[in-house]
Length: 333
Image (cartoon, rainbow, N blue to C red; front, side):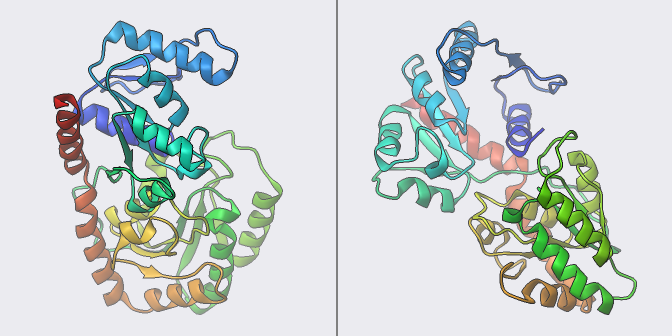
């Protein structure tokens, strides 16, 4: 299950509501899920939207919440009385929201546009006037985190250039020889799937990681990746692309790791002053950050404690309260 699926699951589980989506092999069992059969249409999107609309008519919702699909939100807004659009990615790269005119239409036709970060809100409102609500992502913050951490430097995410996978390997290649007793590990593949295909980039990274002494696991389930975060002393999120939110950074903070990350996109909103920031394209920056934290256990402990405290503000019950308040507001209109 991808990041958006995990978020929708948490909110449906704790805030109520029923989920409609494409059929999946193993749907969640602690919230109501309706698999949608495609309807009639000339395109895959129109067929999917027709199927979703037919399913929704059988449910009779007072409010429809569409996640990350502007075109579908716009279509459903013509068929149902209240529709809210939640955006998890840069709208300027999405069909139905690329242009200022399209985004202005969305503001007119749907009841509310919600973004998961102020960074995305700015992207949506570029060239547009209107009201966009920011509602950050949430996480189930573990009740406890390990006080004694393994001397492990961890990367979790897609093994692509945008995520800085190569910058992580090069930083570890330069720092590990100076850190006896420390290990580094990469969790991830080109895609978030167990059958993710190999690419020239992943093959290059695997070879370079082996030379640098960085272990690679390939794709792991979300639970397995989080278990590693719960053990690691340092987690590195060296994203080059503007992160829409920064979920991996938040997961590292919630699990008690000391965080190193870039300042791209929504990452500074999430991490605040609870991370060491390093530019993935500045020579030696990530290496220097790793060495500084690895050689300063007191700073690691303080940083991790502050990050855990900050992560509590993103805990699922906090997000549920925000969502329920938003729903009440929209339904009262």
